[in-house]
Length: 502
Image 1: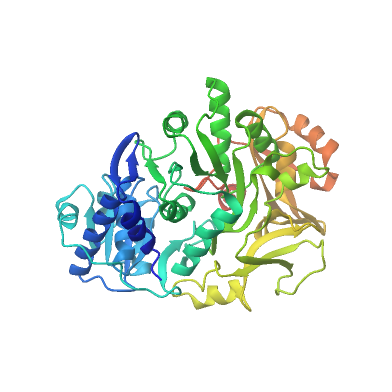
Image 2: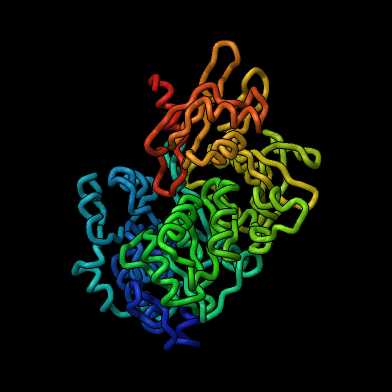
């Protein structure tokens, strides 16, 4: 089944319902949304695009992003969304690796591809080709696809090397969408999804369930994340659901506290994509109330591994509420979870090991990369590369990426545990911990910090809260931590700095 059918059915049933907004301005109802997608799909087919071809989207958030994405699915092709913040050369690598036929761009990004030497057909949504596509004869219906066919080719963020193309099928998208309703939040026609994070990533993966429900889709005029704009649109539309990285949640909290904003109109903020530190989420809940839900996923199992419910995020009455709040929740409906060793062997209950997941929302493999696929999928289980443990109630706690584990003097140090302690200091706004080679101990703990606390103050804080062998042996002060386009701290860059003697 083609996931695009959800839009066609919504247009058939509720065509006059508002669908796409740019800021406060209505751009299209569901009938127009469907009509635009059908015409652009007809144009794509006329350009020679066939089933299983790849069509890329290198665009900032805007209503046409969704029109183009559904047009690609209507045409039977697979979408290759590329983060608009990537450099032209990075985008060019993805286009070359994926074998993309046509690339849609938004203003300001077309030149970046040409400068990077991209030779394929590039369609600017403000240009003549796109205008012609919107006037083309429409397809009668979305091209039939099997559930296991490729729908979305998602390129990992590449924090450890060249990004890999994760093959996401129509079945996976349906599973993630339906799990949203059972494990995250209900969606109704009265709800609004606000795209303040890149639609090429987590925010965009939640569009389908909102199309299925006939909800409203709002793209900020800024094209991205602006705290004041988010608060304004939330008040305007009400019942707003949005996806946010933990760093975005922290920024929203800081701005709201400074300006007196209450978050009126926010219904659900789903956070994921990096570590949410305990102090930050407690502060956010204290200010905004019961609007937060956490999910844990990877590109290889998009948005679909675990969920920490609104109640678990908010409740302070359970005897282990802080442990649950520090977890990433319990397995989502479509998956099985277990903790295993490096070979995928099941470990005893309570053991610390690699988080493994399998189910219909797990990828079939990496695009044209059988070696990486064989390393990541073992007997149907996705080896996430994340280290953690599961308690007797099924709550999973992440400790770190397996590659980030520090072994000093034969003892394991999980960087996140140290980071959590450092972030309790009022003068520290960001912290990231990595290992540095040491001739005697193998590795030693080094903390990169953003803030004004002295090393002596931080040493005393650590001595009071964690074992001495976990205490950083060095503190490196930065104005800001290096991050990728999704807000994740680049520990590879921090290690590079250490290698250069910084």
